[in-house]
Amino acid sequence: MLYGAQIWGLKLNGKPIAKSSLTLLDKLQNQYLRRITGAYKRTLRAAMEREAVVLLLDVYIDTTAIQRAATVQGHLVEKDIYRVLERIRGVRPLWRGNAPKHTS
Image (cartoon, rainbow, N blue to C red; front, side):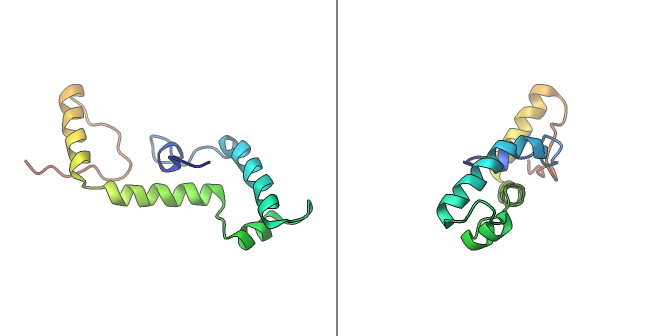
């Protein structure tokens, strides 16, 4: 359901996507949490999430995005992509966080 959320869950400026974009996913998560936990219709969602040890969608997306950023920061492939983009465009691309450091 959230495959690739660390990529599509953030805008290019690094800010989270709008809550309205997660509405359908929220409904699906709520529906399946009820099935998994066997909760009644009026059971609070927070109680189901705690019982199933499931994070809120926006928290999960933010967490995985931060983990990915920490993992790829300074990675050789990221540096190569950065150099190629500089040559092609002649400008600096938009980066989430710090741009990779050049080691020429």
